[in-house]
Figure 1 (tube, rainbow, N blue to C red):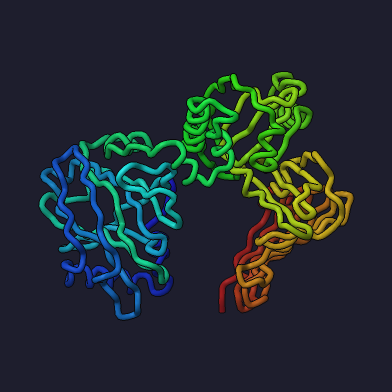
Figure 2 (cartoon, rainbow, N blue to C red; figure 1 turned 180 degrees about the vertical axis):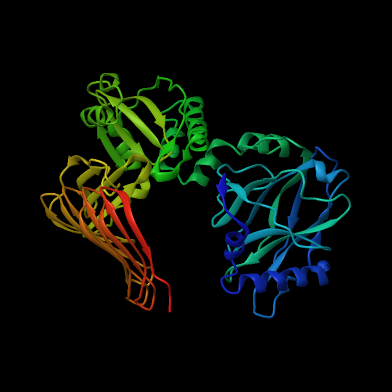
Length: 469
């Protein structure tokens, strides 16, 4: 589940004076609860569907923030029940939370699951720009017979449309609710595979549903496995992640990869067995388990494993290779954190490939050495001078410089600098072989030193904090 605290939930719409605006919001809700449409709930243990118009009428605070949503009455023994719901809201109504109609405001939601599948009766076909969330709240928050408002905040102008979903109070589970448990409790029925592929915006899924190449049951099964893999992949601190994959059945139709490319276009990424073996050895895996002669063609979440020009199996994984997305012209770069991968392009042609680049003190695996040049993407530029020497410049959304990093032997080395939006330095740090080695000085926006630390091979040796005058 995504972890987030109230202040961040609120910040989706409330960017200044959050505590003051929170007080105004609670006061507004409690003085004008009728602005929020009443939703009747079914019996405990059964889900209720709802469709609520947003925007007219709405609660508008004096500083301009706009809120709408619905209200409901907590059922008997609500304090001993878990709250479970799924909603599909317009994309410009992005903040949401709970507030009692009477009494003190209390924190409630702390996490959610992003909707990945689309469901019958709730989600439209090929909807764009919608916010789809599955969420639960453990027993202990609600009080029997009290009324509560589920509010949404409007973040920008847009065409208003209803928020739709399902909601239920369920016997307390006493453990974490995952996707399947929420789907089960609410009776959410996934739409057919074609609609799931559209929601994923997956060309790989489109290929699997092309009956010219694959049996429909095989294609649907592989698409379902992609959702399983996505749901089982957990991000950990430090850029690590864990995932789970199920056994991959063979593809009996064995279509030619050349025909797939002719029909659906080139793959987002291609990996040879030699490269896969090299990575397996580097990562401590079994390189001998990689089949000789195999080449994997990745289309977003799906890898089409090819031997002798024919697809033998289709694997799914949690990385969307289509996001590598090279520029049509010029020099550009892309990356996939879960694959430890950075790719470099001239136009749409890949010209370089590194693994574990820009990942601290990790040794870099050079699959294809990129030519010297300045590579760009929306985050900034990486200029390569050859022989493992780089300068990376990260940008703020307004185009001003946020950070400048330097590399030797493809690892952080020398002086790194960070900047405030106004141009002043936010930090200066010294690196060697990818880790802090030397001084790290942090500055306030007025240019005075806030804190100074000394590191030796990544270990903190000395720390000094300067008080602001």
